[in-house]
Image 1 (cartoon, rainbow, N blue to C red):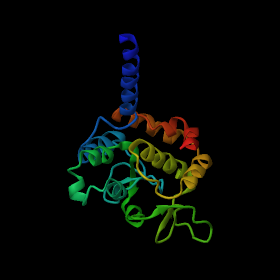
Image 2: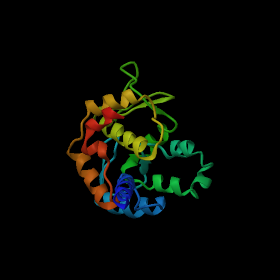
Image 3: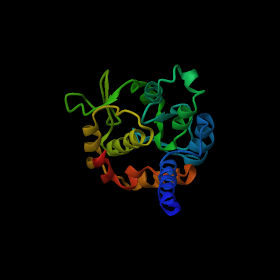
Image 4: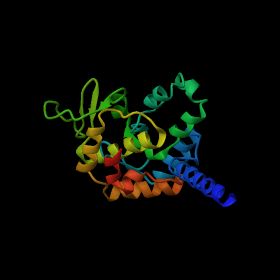
Length: 211
């Protein structure tokens, strides 16, 4: 009888370990992660802004730390209250500390896409200088990062049980349209080294079709 009891116990432990490995469990202080690890480690030598691909050597005044899955939507999904109240919520702090969701973005772009849902707007809406199409309610990123956006949103949905920020079919289409390139893979590997977990949709994009 003891042998039969050991099997489900071992399986439970294995499943628990798998779930922990699948999300950020190393960091839970968003401010420290942003200053010390996002800007201090990941982009210590500069890089390129996410949506506009503008080169930078340091953060400066025109750049900010953005979130592919906006933190306002995380707060809404968790129903943890105001921004200040959510900062005291351990679950929110863990999610807000996840570097897979963080991007360097121009402050003007970040302000403009607040409260917008991701969508294909089509040629009826003109592109700006960065290749972005935008309306009052919707935001369409440049083609070169549509897959990056899709795989990040899928990660947040799957890992933290958050709702889609638009149609899942749109994100799956973007994932197929724009597969991971060297830049995305390099950034992903670096984040995995710092944070301790992968985004499985970057390492295996076909996984999105099963969501």
